[in-house]
Image (cartoon, rainbow, N blue to C red; front, top):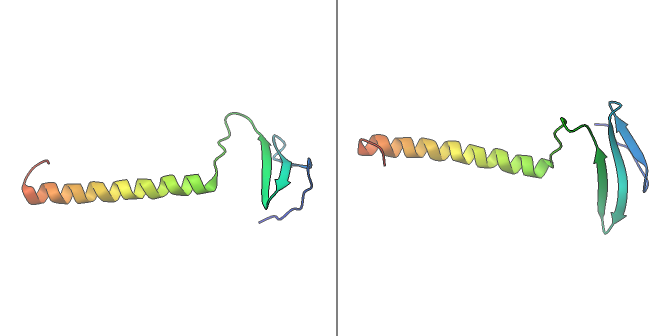
Length: 76
């Protein structure tokens, strides 16, 4: 992991076409602005982890449903 220190309005360039700017620092929070080509997906990690957890739960529920269907001899 690369660790950088940046001040307000300073920028980081990634791969020549992604620009990250420090917009604000207040109350222990940093606000970043990101300029990137539209084809580059940008996600907050906590939301991505939440979606992964929901997908795992959905698969698990599908397995339970299948077991119930098998137990009752057909679809519910």
